[in-house]
Structure formats: C-alpha cells, structure tokens
Image (cartoon, rainbow, N blue to C red; front, side, top):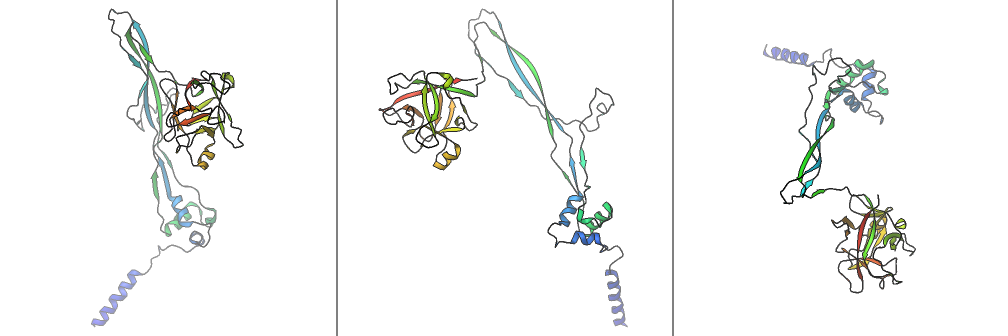
Length: 331
C-alpha cells in the first residue's frame, strides 16, 4: 500500500511539471529570429532595439545676463585719482525648468508659445528577415519567446540659453582715469626694434618681418626684413600659442643654446622631433616665445647666412645683436 502511494505522488509531480498550452509556437516567425547561423541577422539585438522606448525630457531653458558698462563723468572738487576698470561680466543664474502643463502656456492664442514638452519615441521598425511574423503583434510575441523584454531609456535633456543685456552706468570724477579693454586683433605684422645693421650696413630697427623660403632646397621658411609693410607677412597665434605664417609654425632646436628660427609645417616639425615655439603678446605689445630654454630673439649675421640671421637663443651671444619684435595689428 505504501509503495502505491509513493508511485501516485511521483505521477502527480510529473503531471504538474508538464508543459502547458501557453508554450511558444515554433512557427516561421520564431525560427527567423532564432536563425543565428546567418551573420546578417541579430535576432536578440534587433528585438532589444525594437522593445526600447527612448524618452527625451523637455528642453531646459538657461537664462544668462550680460552687463554692459558705460561711463559718465561729473565735475567734483576732489582731486584724488581713482582708477576704474570697466569690463563686461556674465553671471549665469541657476537653470530653471518650465512646467510641462502650464495653463498659461497652453492657451490657444497666436501670441503665446507652447511650453517645451517631453518627447517619447517608441519602436516601430521590424527587420525584413522577420517578414514571416504577422506584424507588430507576431514579432513582439516571438521576441518575448527568446527572453527579450521591453525597456526604456531617458536621454539627457536638451537646453537652450537666453541672454538678456542690462546697462550699468559708472560715474567717476573728471580726474579719474578709466581703463578700457581693447579687443586684440587676431592677425598682425612684426616690426623689428633694435637688431643692429644688416649685411649692407642699413639699420634693421623699424623694418618688418617677411617669412619666406630659406633657399636651402628644403621645405622651410626663415625671417627676412622689408621696409614696406604691404610686403610683410601677416601672422597670427594658434589656439596652442603657435606663431603661424601661412600654415608654417615657428620652431627651433630646443636642446641647443641658440639655433636659427625656422618656420615649418606641423608634420615636418614632428618628423624632426621638435615642437612649435609657444608664443604670446606682452603688455608692451611685443612678441614673447618659448621653445625649451630658448626665449631670446637675436640677429647673428656673421654666424648664419639664411635669411636675416634671426636665431632663437637661451642666453645672449656677444657675437649677436638682440632684437625685439613689436606686434602691429593688421586688421
């Protein structure tokens, strides 16, 4: 009797584990998605993409305030001098979000614009290899049978910036000196200050820099001096501080005490194992460059015969003449 009860119990357990009528149908739709032998079919990945819903939050509006300063002068008896530095400032406040359902914004009137809304993009594209599926319902059912479930992703909210300008008046006495910032022209000429005489005994001081081919058969340029500014080279500084003349960057041999100042392409400079000189404009409107330990411009007419003999050095050479290069805006 006991053995009979045990046998009936095992039969009951087996009956409970048997597949139900809700099992997936092995139809052509499911087989097309499971056909992993085809390299062009990505059944599981395509199902995941189909089930993915993308939500883009409403646009965030950022408000920035720019303050423009103007100066007015009033006569006073105080003779003290006050220096006032006037410069525009911008103070962006904290970002504020508009309500999605703003009753005032939803009024249907031509002069009122609707508030930004969240955008939800739901999947709709079924791969061509799943043409055996009976539309979205059949494809979704087959994807569920291989274990893919619906998912949702939220992308970062886009933002727009609205800038408002206010005017502030600075009042100073008639004896006050107001310093105003002047935008520096991005392109400029270089004019020699000092430098002695050239090979013909003519003063270099006041001449302009012309960057031209060195004549040595290599694709590099050197500095010459000309008296006519219309024939001088127009230069500018790159974002990294490189001194640029028509795509050629100033460089030297930073491991040496002094070396001829060349202008080469970035590719050639890299091939030589060098780096472009890093330059800036001083408050006195002169060019200042650094390349390793080299920081001085000199003219060594008796030591080099290329161009005007302008070298880049780390210390003064008694056989050379120091020269400063003044920045002259050309625009």
